[in-house]
Image (cartoon, rainbow, N blue to C red):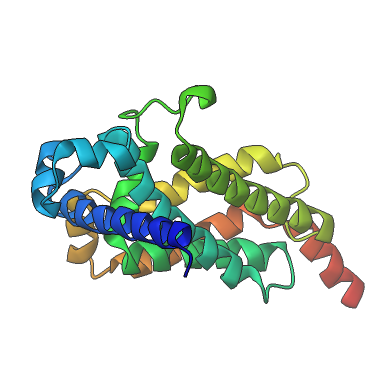
Length: 225
């Protein structure tokens, strides 16, 4: 292997090593309870070396959030491959997201924190490349959802009086809320014998009823009589 390529590989390996160590710390203690000094001690490097790879703690955090965002994006795209219509795509997106929440709870928690007001992501020009990529992946999932709603309207399965963009925002907020149910509410549901999975399923049914084009269904039923 050429010397230049070997140096690049070594740099990428060290960067991955730093990310792995920082990820464990953020997962276990949270963003605000970790400093660059903590990360440097964990990987047994001086802080100056750490800054050669990451501008600051925020940039390091965004790199880890991007890992989770890529996993989620990949899961969504895989789930919708076999879908035949807009409603199926919406169902698949919800299933993919909650599988992500259940399988990667730490990445989800970090992703939610990234989306909170803790970080300023409004001015795109000042964002690092990883933060921009996270936002691009979110936007891509937003477009997939919005297009699924448009397809459902065109197919006659979703109400035509709905605004696809507004409903996409609504669904995004619903899914986000379902991924961070307050412990008090979890206890209330558990006392009624309702699991978190069942609650998500019930909410999905409620949403389906809200979106369903019953007029089109009734028209088809009359036609078949």
